[in-house]
Image (cartoon, helix red, strand yellow):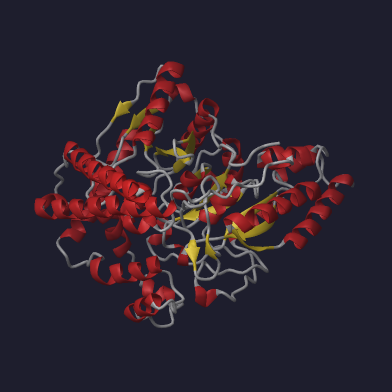
Length: 565
């Protein structure tokens, strides 16, 4: 009887939710945009919108029934306060001999051993080697090989451990990118960014979980399984740098590195409540990671820092951008009071994406109030209608890349092509070595990617170019744009399959090449993180990083998911 009443109540809430969703969709009047297929065919827009709403609402009921009542697996409490230090603070204390590198490295090794059985974020490690390297660092400091000033200038992260996603090469560790056929691949050298971090004195500690071939926004694969959110273990960590953002949020490492071709740094950082920076295109080397970007995709793919504290963003970025430091104003001081502030509440009402959650809208409003009260800055609301076409623009830009392999070819290590239909049949029998998101992407690629011969293709490329020009003119050298990091807080495991295109909130900035910093904004009513993206013009990374520091001061930044004893 009680179960029947519960189901009846859920169905009632489901019907109410459906009505509210349709009402919300009707309030967001679509902006007609020349060249946007959806806008030029209202019936198609209505169909897509209706299908998306139905999938959204059905998935909400299904996943609520599945996961509500499931206990969240609490993380062990923090007993060692070293785990709560920023990377920069640890480096300073190591230089000043207040802490030893061995002590720091050992602390994070012990933490990883505590959290990994619960979260499954670390997939390979070099703990013994890291401890040996830490002891060498301590020996060098005791012997006075470098003065404190020399250590700060030449090796700013001397003795500090760091983690990195399993798409980058770390010598001696598995380098799978989440692809089963690569499960026995071991890196024989370090990726460029690993070399740069080593040169800065940092010590590689481990590699972290990713989605299959880093092309989905939940980190799960057939080699290592699925990673869980430290704030709510039946929710996702995002992808593809999901394991990395997770290990940062759970205090498993003080510094992390990720890569981003459609939001793979920013989405995981948003879902895990940490800071992540997508640099201006072409600043940080992508050499030594898998999959390999070619042609124009080299500009879409970027590598950047993932950290708990905003004050680590600039020091880590300075290390990563060392070979191209002249191209960005990393060391330029940004005056917050002189920043021009713009904002968009959503993408304009795309038929492909979920409406922005009310708590994320409220988080953005709190930022606007802070800047007006604290600095007298009145934010300007802008409506850039081309954002509504972010999904088709992104896929058109991917289709424009010359010499790129298809995803089905990538899944076969570029040695032929997988039979995606056969793999789907095998998957239904639990025999496939591929995940369903990867197989669906292979199917999508076959039937729905933009052909260069279609009428829409050149129009979408023109729209992207025009949008880039509009943003360049709007932002100039002193403007930033606040834009949602994602339409919703962290979904349940597997729910992204019903919200496929929500990644467009981050992906659009990859094809625009702009620098973006994801900033945490506390926790929502479900106990999972909220956040915001801060966007600036090309090579104005210092602006987004300065705003990140300001938002951390004002709103607290990262929230520890563990009890601190």
